[in-house]
Length: 207
Image (cartoon, rainbow, N blue to C red; front, top):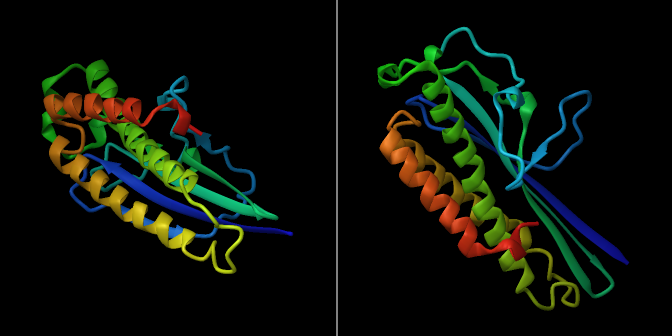
């Protein structure tokens, strides 16, 4: 017998904006005629062309990234398997560029540097999500008896949602400390530390 479960935890991250990030939790559902989700990969960094959503005419934002952790699991007889992914949703992500931002600190560097700094900020949002996805994979890999206990799968949704709360807190702290990507020094520190965390979690947890 096959028993399965799935959860999509979606988060929108705004850059150079004082409002808090918005979060939504929902079951996965296929989206029609929209760009495919981009799975996190060390060999596939984000590009400006990935931001395909409509840019608002007001609001003071430089960019917005729709980053999600998708979690799916199943039992086939007594065998437990799970797929945990950090993904980027192009259809709900948009790029206005630093010129659209209310933050004046973007003006201290050239246009190319501003774009590069903003893109790095968005990429690190994605990287932070991948660190949490790896932690969930590691947690799931250590579970025993999931498929042999009558209620073994019941706590899994709550586990993912607990990790999501940790992710929300970390992403909020990241935006505050980097001033939504406009503080170049803080941005460099966060990028370095996030990549270091990914390395410490290991390639074995990269899928």
